[in-house]
Amino acid sequence: MMIPPFLSIDPATRHVSLDASNPAFYRDPNAVYAALHAHCPTFYWEQQKQWFFTGYDHVNSLLRDRRFGRQILHIASREELGLQEPDQHVAHFDLAERYSLLELEPPEHTRLRTLVNRAFVSRHVEKMKPELAELANKLIDSFEKDNEVELLSAFADIIPVTMIARMIGIPEEMGPQLLKWSHAYIRMYLFGRTREDEDGADRAAKEFSDYVKTVIAERRANPRDDLLTHMIHTEHKGQYLTEDELVSTTIVLLNAGHEATVHQIGNSVRIILDSGRDPADLFKDEATTERTVEESLRICAPVHIFQRWALEPVEIDGISFKRGDKVSLILAAANLDPAKYSDPLTFKPDRNEAANLSFGAGIHFCIGAPLARLELNVILPILFERLPGLRVARTPVVKNVYHFHGLDRLDLSW
Ligand code: HEM
Image 1 (tube, protein in one colour):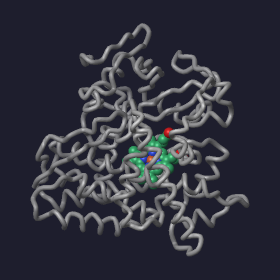
Image 2 (cartoon, protein in one colour; image 1 turned 90 degrees about the vertical axis):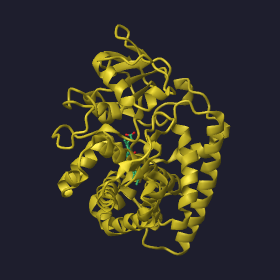
Image 3 (cartoon, helix red, strand yellow; image 1 turned 135 degrees about the vertical axis):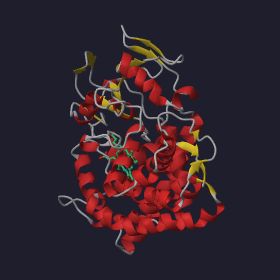
Image 4 (cartoon, protein in one colour; image 1 turned 45 degrees about the vertical axis):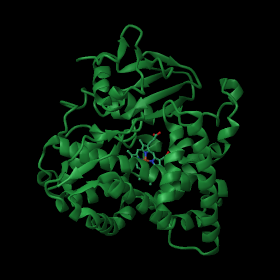
């Protein structure tokens, strides 16, 4: 297995040096993941100052391991862990994240997740199939005659935000504004974020929260058949959600609800076109469509890394972690583990191997997975069927960020 020139691995110490801002890496991270699998699947990333796991079995079991958590301050103080006090310039962002499902552990996590879960189960989201197909068709109508399109702005950007806004009960005309807030907000999760990113994210968090509060007030006065009304009026063991919990939950659903899915629509279309396979075969029926979608999620996932805190001293793969250490799990690399997948870097929708880990596992398993899967399974066959001869018109531009993996543009013609 070749090691790319910009990657340095010391198998003896398991130390790896890799600049995440190097375009050669973030444009094609799969090549690096393959080299890591071959030489050093568990490694200390010098620039990130943390241990990373790429092995499928390690990532899968760590996601489920209750000795690790998304949160640590529920069991230890900042002082005890030697953590800095929170930065004041991101106070609005921190408040918006305070009750994010993604940042909680049981029992708070269980309570919040139970309240929203019902809206996201497959049999509920399945009902959105006709309106999803209608939206995809309407968007294609608007550019079909042009014989070319930039797919992200004309199609991929619009569908997930429209669907999640409808579910929550946010007026659809807010779509463009929601996208702006969300783009600014998620810059906080990027490697190498700048002070400017932090200020932008904090501003977005404040504006976003203020806006959500006005919608909450409106729904309290005039209940409707939407998720926000449901969250306001549903109690769990005699307790209602507080205003801050409602705001956090709404924001995390809106952000997570479209950002990853937008990227995945672009990634899937690109992978399918690059594979040279006949779309008529790939989308022959529902079962083949599902395999095509899952294989594109495996080989080109939109969000590569999730982190965990060690909640107690624990040893994994010969590495000792103490309480308060952070570990990173590279889901997109686990999806390429040669121990689980034959010829892992090749798009093979007919493979019958391990399920991909792109939606995580365990108690934080993506609550939106049934919705995201429905979106991909409904809109991709429509796109390929309506635009026969679809092809890539210009080399796609991968976003200049790690660890989100998506395209800036996907120019297509037919
Ligand atoms: C292709 C699209 C998507 C991918 C690849 C994805 C991926 C993930 C992953 C890997 C996690 C687990 C994180 C962890 O374990 O730390 C997660 C959690 C989550 N996702 Fe998604 N997601 C997608 C779409 C969505 C959608 C459409 C929604 C919203 C409706 C959503 C809402 C959430 C929420 C709220 C959580 C936190 C769940 C919890 O902590 O209990 N995601 N997602």
